[in-house]
Structures are given as structure tokens and as C-alpha cells.
Length: 409
Ligand code: GCO
Ligand code: MG
Image 1 (cartoon, protein in one colour):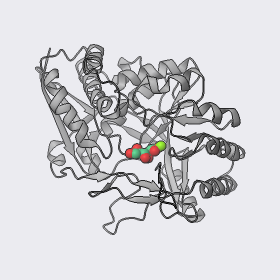
Image 2 (cartoon, helix red, strand yellow):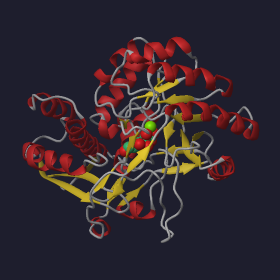
Image 3 (cartoon, protein in one colour):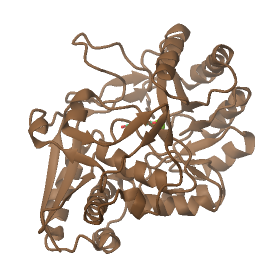
Image 4 (cartoon, protein in one colour):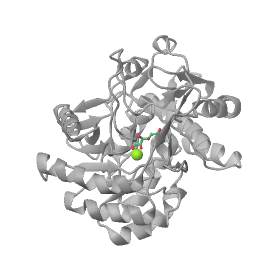
């Protein structure tokens, strides 16, 4: 069996997505997600200019060999562009293998370790009443775990707080990169944030009780000592996790945070390889691995990092915003169902337009996700729907402090 075609598909139903589709000489197709929010065309070029020609005539069954070939033969290792491209190939090959075997990928990874994948949803509000409404709305949708993000008095726009509905009535939230030729500038004040956030969690606990698992995303904005202080301040509210409390390319920073707080820590959505987690896992400085299949080289390395993490009782919390396409999302659901050390899965849901381009077998019932039992990933790419949505340039926002200094967004 050999690969005869490698197509790079770019579409923008409500945000940009990059998808790789491989076809074998028997006509079996496999999909892979290569979406890198705000830098999509770099991955599309990496794939079409440098990877697709190397795949033609290869045996699609040789997943590990192809992964190692792409990783090592490039010489230049790691990085989000490279690893998103390799991820797409890896997923597409697993998809093909599953279709040939007539099995969903989770069966090829060892079979289901649970009946469903507990998911958390994103509640946010510009003030306490709107935050409570958002939490209630998510509980109505079936979510049993809730991420809480709020506006901060004195700060105009904050990551994670949904905007108003667009006048068109179309779904709109903070997640898609803003369409246009330049990133939007937002403002930030860490001291104001550190003062305000514990009061929000106190209000939420008072209203919703002690049981509901609550999460929060610090989005890389704190120094280690600020993160330690926040973790400590949030301890009375028993968070499920505090995410990305520091910019974690400095893994040692987490030692300091860990010394000061028992609030569980989750990190890794911007990581690309197991090496980014090496110290964090070995020294048990985190509790949840936030990698996404799409930015971490695909299904194969995601399974490997979780097997490594299992030795240290560290669990999964895979990154699942809308910039992980339904293809990448399905890939990590299959991994999540198979591994023993599953923790929780982030799930925002995609727009209707996205769901017409990517036809899926995934289900979300009573707060639990399941990838479905279709062979392979269980996702079909609808070319006719996709062609209505050409690529649109888009950038994530960035932050400046009051004195004009650029800060982590
Ligand atoms: C999350 C992430 C996202 C990122 C996004 C950037 O926890 O879901 O922080 O919201 O901001 O993936 O493209
Ligand atoms: Mg995050």
C-alpha cells in the first residue's frame, strides 16, 4: 500500500483551519489537523512545499517510521510550525490505519479505559451576574466542570471573557483570532488581577457550592512569585486547576510556584514536544498535561508523554479550544479514551459553519465526550461546504501595560 496524494486544505468557516488529507492507492483517505492560530499559512506552506512531496509512495502503515523520518530528517527540530505539520501527518496515518482495520483509533491504542470523557466548559462574565448566568448556561448544557474567567475592574478587555453576540446573531466569543491585518492591542495590570480574582471565586463558591469543579486560566501572565501568591489565595476555593500560571518555557519557575501552593497546576498548551515537559513531569511540578494533539506532533507523541506522566500520577487535560479543529480534537479524544491517566478535556464546541465542513461522529452527553465508533478518527471533510469559506488573515491580540510595555496576552 502507498500514499498517492497529499492535499493541504485551508478553510475558514468561522476561523481558519489547516487540514492535511492523505489518499492511498486503494482510495482510503486520512485527515490530520495542522491549524496554528494566527500563523496558519506557515504550516500550510511547510506541508505543501516540504512534506507532501516526501509522502508520495510511502507506506501509510509505517506511522512511527514516518514520524521519525520527518522529525529527524528536517535537522531543525521542534517548534510549533514543524510539529503541527508532523502532527497532521501522524493523525492522517492513524486515520488511515483505523479505516483499514475497521476500528476507531482508540481501539488501536489499547481500547477504552472509560465510558466517556469528562469535559469542562468556558464560563465568563464582565461582572458577577453575567458570570453566574454563563455558569448556569453551561450547567444547562450538561457541563459538570467549569472554567471561570472574568473581567478585571480597570482593564478594558481580558483574555477568556466572551464578547457580546455579533449584530449578525452569529456565535462570537474571545477565541477566534481577530480578522484583519494587525493584532488588536489589549491592556493588562497583574496587581489588579491578583486583587480581584479571589473575590470572584469566593462569589462563585458561595453561589454554586463546594462540589462543582472550577478551573482558571492565568494565560502565561504572571511571574513565579505572583503565580505562587495567586495559587495560595485561591486555595480556599478548591480549584480543579490553575492553568498556565507562568510562561512555562522556563520550567524551573514551577519549582517556586509549587513550594508555595497546593492548588493543582496545569501547563503545556504551547508546548511542542516531550522535552518541554521533561522537568515538569520528572520533578512532579505539574498535575495536568495541557498538550494538544495538533501542536505536539500528533497522536503518537501525545500517547508517549501521557505514558511518561503516568509514572508520576500526572493526568491529561488536553488543550481543546476552537483552534484545535474537529480533526485534532477527535485525535485527542481517542487518546483520552484509551489512556489510564485521563484527567479532563477542555471543550468549547465549534460553530455550526465549522461543523458543516467537518462532519463528526463525536458526542457530548451529560458532560461527557466520546469520539464515536466510526473507523479511524470519525471525521469527514466536506469539500463542498469548505469552498464557501476562503482563508482570512487573522491575528491573536496582544497586551500592553499602562506604561506601554508589551506583556504576555
Ligand atoms: C485555552 C487557551 C486558548 C488560547 C488559544 C490561542 O486554554 O483554551 O488558552 O484559549 O488562547 O488557543 O490560540
Ligand atoms: Mg489556556
